[in-house]
Amino acid sequence: KGAMVKVYARVRPEDDRGSEGEALRFSKRSAAWNGREYEFERVFFPQEATASLYRSAFELIVQGAADGWEGLIMCYGQTGSGKTHTCFGDDSSPGLALLAAQSLFELVRARPNSEFAIKVSLLEILDEKASDLLHSRSPVVFRSSSDVSPSAASSTRLVFHGLRELAVTCETDFVAALTAGLAERTVAANYRHRVSSRSHVVLRITLEAAHVLGADGVGGVDGAGGAGGEGSGGEDEESAPAGAGSADEGVPLAPVVTVGSFSLVDLAGSESASLNEQRAVAVNGAGINRSLLYLRQVVRALGAAGAGGAAPSLRN
Image (cartoon, rainbow, N blue to C red; front, side, top):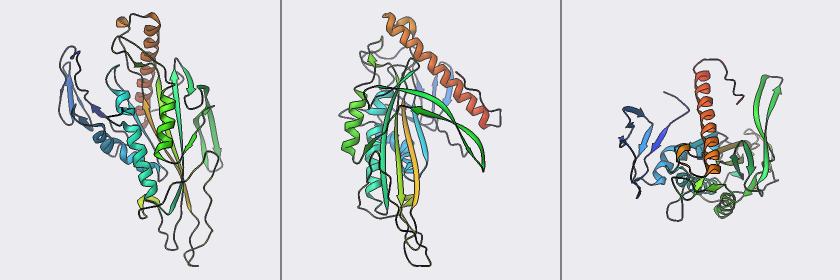
């Protein structure tokens, strides 16, 4: 109750290869396989479109980013389970990324009292190395950085040195950037299908917003404001502040500035090393499995810390 983390499951339709082993049994909130039953926030059936998943699991995250919140959706599963299709879709079925962009720019147009600067980055992680897919695969280095303020204890955050954001002002800009970036992603054939993602990819969209308040304190935050208006932004631009004032003076107040973001993570799928006949693909698959093992350890450690346990040590 009140948890900030929700887990959904999506069941992929069977293809020409059929299914292997015991059939999966599922209902709207649970799935059972191999003698064990798992509960989920929601289970999406094979006939349900990605748009249904977006409305249930991702739409509120996108809307919250416009008001300064941070959110994340992560697609996890074995190779060939449909993660990349769910994230990025195809010509006939838009994925979560495009649906999020459409929703985002509709929201921007519906907030004439707010000015937005929207930026996007696309990061690939492959064999413990990171690359910027929007800037010619330039290398990205992870570093820890401590932020110290007089009023708060120091905190450590992760900084991505070399990862640059690209400004987008409309859906067309977003689609062009995403298409170009995904064309740089590392793929190869494996035992499951001809084009398999061999890396983890993180799509991150950042929204810097100046919500202009009226003399009565009413503005664009939390969805206020009518239809119309356009978002604005640039890679090196900052939203211009409105004139300062106060409600007593009957003039607009200074804008409320927020910075929010949401990330969509398409994880490479876990693999059976013995089924990969090509050595290079098998070695890469082993690296994918190892990274997913580390991810599981991280999630468990964070869960334990959130339940009152010690802060996790995530050196790996």
